[in-house]
Length: 487
Ligand SMILES: [Zn+2]
Image (cartoon, rainbow, N blue to C red):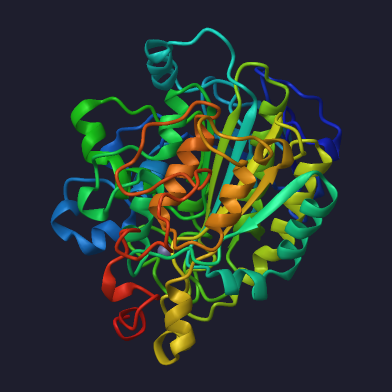
């Protein structure tokens, strides 16, 4: 089978760039074994987060934990399944994407399936309307983009030891392409697992205040940046942990311009409705490599993020922010993350080759971040080093030299000086959140947050920052005995 999105901007296949233009799905079943009998079918997946009722977006896990709510709320997978649009074609067909929507399509020839993705040319109407209402500035935003890759459950040590190619790529790009690399040795989680760390990381508040603050990417979207969001887990993290209740109450949040989640809600990546996706040998938490439609799940996601960057690279209107979530680290062996190494290293190099990543300010800041280290498996359960690693997630920043050469208003020294100091300070997801807000509103300074401070700022404390000052519970603190014995 040969299937492709005719409108996509892929340098590799020579397709022309069609910002705002129509794109089409081309399906040719003649190369399949069953071509004599083949019927081409194109199944379009609607955008799930940007447009649908937010009460429908909770994950399957939520239902397992909250059976009472399951009766009244549909899962994200239900929403995706309900939104499928199918077009039957003959052996060889050109099919237009549905007007106004659709980030992904599945082309089928007989039993063969292929996933096609695109970056929709227009923002959802709801977000466009909110932006217009919020628009206070007339001049265009300075073009500093932000790419954030979140890797669940990966410590700094695990990233370096299990992703040697990506680690080498980060160092090489910093050495040879006008970028600077910062790694934060004392980045410390504030809780055991995902929710208690990602709420501080994405929204800047403790888990007890879930639903009171919007994720940093939505703030950036309302501020005018084009925002792309991708996750290879069938879960809407933004509404699951962060903002659903407040958004329902006030209706002020805007969502994102484009998102890629729906394909990861479908078999073969995600089990059919009614089957438990938390199994060890299939699905998004499998201890085996995770495939979706004939490729690794992460390859679809990383390719789409590059497409999103390229689709916006020539747009004069606004800088972009892309937020990708990879769940490959979430399994007991700690080995599946190795499968991401080649693709992540390749993605970073592609962004440099395409001038998305470079040393001047018309460039992109890259942040690689986790919520905590591995919180399952033998190393975590039985060894002290595993317990320590669990509290020390990875945080790397690859930044343009022109950015870190700058000084913030009212501060001595450069941003580079502040970052180097913070590399050795105790910092938390709250501080990373403040930094992401800073980058997402650059060069404006965002409002201060209650628990964190931007890593571009010089630390206020004269002595080394304590866990209490950083809002790390004392029983988790790795600077005291409590951190080890209390895990
Ligand atoms: Zn996690």
